[in-house]
Length: 190
Image: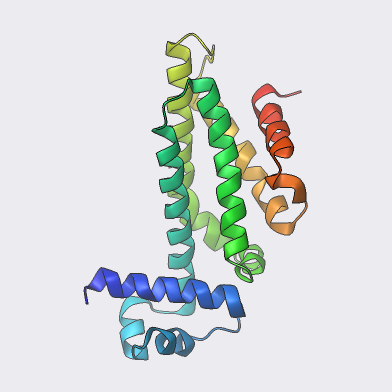
């Protein structure tokens, strides 16, 4: 079995165990046993449970970025694409949170790990949003003077909704009406 495949198996198993049992209640031994590998093999890939947790978070964020990138390839005008991007982003976060069960609570205690691992996603997201804004400017649909700054503000606004969402403060987040209201507010302001 290849090195990358073994590492990916460990990450997937750790994600599942973290989601089921919580990070605190999952041991490196649990992960190795579930993978049907020795602890020594696990430690070849990851120095500690924090190290594998970081890899799990990065894996989830990579999947998020990949799904968002796919949305940019869809054929629609930039205004629709931007709103669709926001909707899809909300749906993906909802799906990720629901799939990961007990991992939700750990995100709050380990927010510095999440922030460290998502730096690349933040940059990628800003570039994706900026590309939509530039395309809209070119088609005369938008009049955004500084697409880079606007992309950063939109991305920060969306990111600011995440923790309240994880905590459950934005329960109706997944309803179409709520997504519409959030997108309109972020894009239209007051």
